[in-house]
Image (cartoon, rainbow, N blue to C red; front, side, top):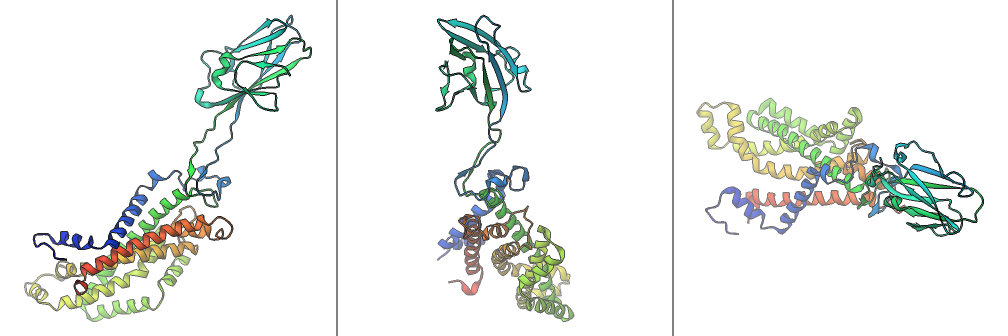
Amino acid sequence: MNLPPNKSPFQQTMLLFLESKTAIVGLIILTIMFGAGLLAPLLSPQDPYDLAKIDIRDGRLPPGSMKQGEAPKQILKLELKLPKDIAQKPLVEKITMKEQDFLSDLQISLNQIGSDRTYRIKFGENPDFKLGEIAEVRLRRLPKGAKVSVGEKIKFRREWKLQFNHLEHLAFTIPNELKEKHKIEIVIIGAKREQLFTFWLGSDDQGRDMLSAILHGVRISLIVAASSVLIACFFGSIAGLSAAYFGGIVSILVMRLIDLKLSFPSILIAMILLAILGKGIGNVVLAIVLAQWPLYARLVRGVALSEASKEYVEAAKSLGLGSSRIMFRHIMPNCAAPLIVLATLQVASAITLEATLSFLGLGLPVTEPSLGSLIANGFEYLLSGHPWISILPGFVLLLTVIGINFVGDQLRDILNPRLQR
């Protein structure tokens, strides 16, 4: 690709980067992942850290299931005693719940139409209950042959379902030939208090929404990976730059530490450290830093050794510039390109290492879901009909690592002069 000469180095780098379709796909994936992790508290339907909002009865629900809210509660029950005949006293009401103020303006009248008796019940104009708090009203235990002016009858039961506003027009008629006493119940049922939502990606074994847990897991994984890479890159670059510039005992000490670390697998060092220090984000970051800093130190040392022998370094020394200025103002900028490539690729390694530690139970605690711990929670349900608990966070982890590798590979092709076409 022939780049226009009037473009800045940054613009030329971006043009070369956008030349690769896989790099664009990786950048889109990373943008979505970083955006989802950054806005996780706002995008999550449920807070997976709030144990008060997690119900184990919602555990292992398939994707698309509706959260089961609290069952409607009976908040008031009014019992009316019907007299034997109309000559007796009017109805006697008995409040069996505590909300007595609700019925302070209750009016009950008794009328006779032909051979039947009609009862009209009217509640006060300013009841304490709000319409949004009432789910329905049920009229129970009416005698056979009774007729109700509002609502609908439940099949095979002597029970009618009414709306709250029907109470203003409630009237029921009972045949006058009935001689026995009847106790009629008016039951007011409250609405469900808890706002329902949908488990779009299902729920795990603890009843947490998988979508919310994955969003927070991506956030934690990216925070751990980015912070550990920055810290490891900072200390590793200083160690490698010092070894290349000063040489002697400093170079020998740094290289022997690097050789010592590289003789052990990174996962083994991290497991030993976390077994001693315990779980937690800080300890996981420290374990990843100790596992990755030699890679940056060795890279910077190799680049700095070739730069230290060049003329501009000799000229800076002849001008009497200090060692720190020569190291960080002259040599270090020439090490930035390979460092950026290595740091980008090591973000994927850090995410994978953190997920591995959490999967083994040594990373983050259960109360702080990461992608690794989510995969571990659903691992035992893979063959029991609930595969989404483990597959979905594993798929998100795979997408994140692939996106980082796509971007890192293209940056390596651009920033490495030997690989440029």
